[in-house]
Image (tube, rainbow, N blue to C red; front, side):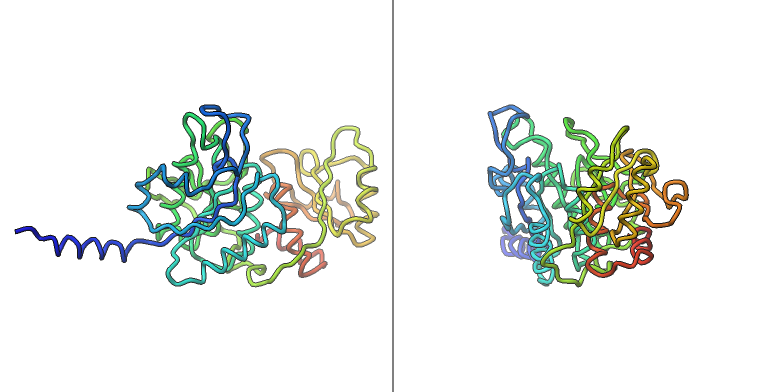
Amino acid sequence: MRNDANIQKYRELAQKQMKKIIVIATGGTIAGSGEDGRTTEYRAGTIDVSDVLKTIPQINDLAEIEMISLISVDSNEMNERYWIKLRNTINEQAKRPDVDGIVITHGTDTIEETAYFLNLTVATEKPVVLTGAMRPATATSPDGPFNLFQAIALAANDQAHGCGVMCLFSSTIYSARNIAKTNNHKIDAFGLNEQAALGYMRDADVFITNHPTTRHTLFSRFCNKQFEAFPKVRMATYYAGADTAILDALEHDCDGIVIIGTGSGNYSQAWLQKLDELAEKGTIIVRSSRVPHSIVFDEQVFDPKNHFIGSNTLTPFKARILLMLCLTQTRDIEKIRNAFFRY
């Protein structure tokens, strides 16, 4: 006698136990299309991510998926307005008791900036995972489907709770704070700023071996703040022979400046003199480095008056985000300096 009733019962039970994952699409190469088979000369954000999901039907055995097509842009079009929209959407979805995790598809060029902004501002311990692709969906061997499969598996895994915002690429789990794009043509395009990965994956299996030590998500002082706009924080790159014209141009157009210096956040004496003048007029200045693997501490030689803030292990682009958020709350340089060690 067939036991169809029991089989149906077990199927219904499995369905009830299955995690619900929200996939928020923002565009990028993972949703890009071009000439069939080619990996170059394509347009990002031109197809629906739901079409990518159709190529990985096995995902339906891992989680119940709900799609939100929020925006569809090349990640070079990402900006603060989109960040606020994305962050608010994540917070709204995370409040739902039936939602277990959130995955965001995003272009790789600025994914590290979006991830760090979200890491500091979303108000949930539920897993939030960003992923994308280096090859468009129309390539001969696109990497997006497998990255998306693993990102959903990660977001549905209990180990991922409390890890802050994460990024998933090529079976590696990265923290939003430490991920950086280090290659522009290989599918294994991301690295870390001298920090260990949070873990790795083997197909849908999750192995988290480290946890973030800096503040994030519900532990961040920015997570419950509502944002409509941000103070202006600009960036200025020092190079051999650079004059101070760029600093003159920024003098009346920003609240803060991140200097992308050489070595340990270094620059010429002419730049030091000009930066001291700007600091004395109230501009908050952070020293960072153009060196990929660097730590910028406070430095008496290049900051004898203690006017500036070292970026610690943050890249210049993430230092800008942290400074921007700090300036929504304070202009006290010591409080901001402390944030660069805690976040």
